[in-house]
Length: 190
Image (tube, rainbow, N blue to C red; front, side, top):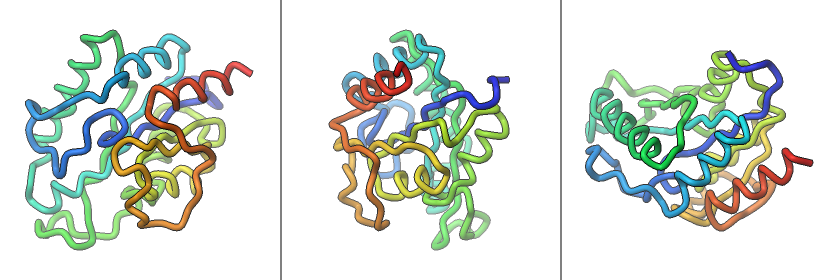
């Protein structure tokens, strides 16, 4: 277990670590964004837990199964490991209020901008949300981080906040995960 009160970095998956692909449903379609593995490895080297939190409405809409998603995440972990990087945990929400797969149709508190995945990570890993960072490419990511008390960084990669789903202003806007990690390591070091 990670010591209570410890800083962590929450990363959205698509558009932050991986190329933004509509309903990624095959491990072979994973494409790491330039610099993503190296940035995560820098957080690992600094002893900062790295946690992915991702909405996966594709499951609710029948584009992939939870087993498909597990294979995708296994491939993601393997590709990061090839570059000396690791994720401490991955949390996902398969639900959507307009799901075509009835078993996943609900307004789930885990689905960002809800903060359920962040709270679960807090409880599982013993981290402090108010000392942590959330890096995302969508306004729903940023709102989730803000509601949980995290410092928020919006990356211009992926949707770059152009989704305009939520009225929220990030603490900082950066080009990509590499710049986000530069900011985080500077702030944590000070």
